[in-house]
Image (cartoon, rainbow, N blue to C red):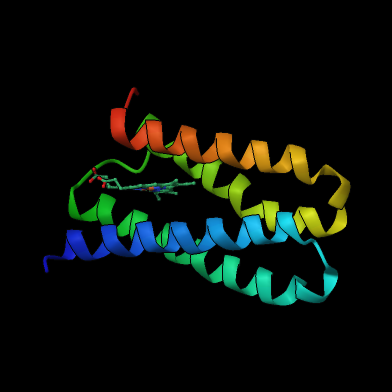
Length: 115
Ligand code: HEM
């Protein structure tokens, strides 16, 4: 397996883990699960960022490309969602819609690279 394929696999796997655990928090924002959720989403989030930058470096894509900046904003916002839902559980319906929108925007950025 070449390096790019390895980082793509890691990136997508970490995305699935992060999304799954974030939506578990939306479904059951019981504070007893808070630390485990924050640990799992935190690690997955760091792996997404590291693999994203590794792919940029391998392909010599500038870090300042518009689509990369938009993905970084989506990544940051998605990463904060699990932390927020334990404090504002009544907003979980809205937060889950926002999370879906962030994921969609990040996917459009990587598949269409509009900027
Ligand atoms: C919520 C945030 C994110 C989502 C949903 C997401 C999703 C994805 C997906 C599904 C792919 C695989 C595309 C393919 O198969 O070709 C991908 C690739 C990639 N992502 Fe992300 N990503 C996110 C955040 C980031 C961040 C923060 C960075 C940069 C630090 C990044 C950089 C990249 C790069 C460079 C690729 C490879 C693009 C290519 O070679 O075509 N992503 N991303």
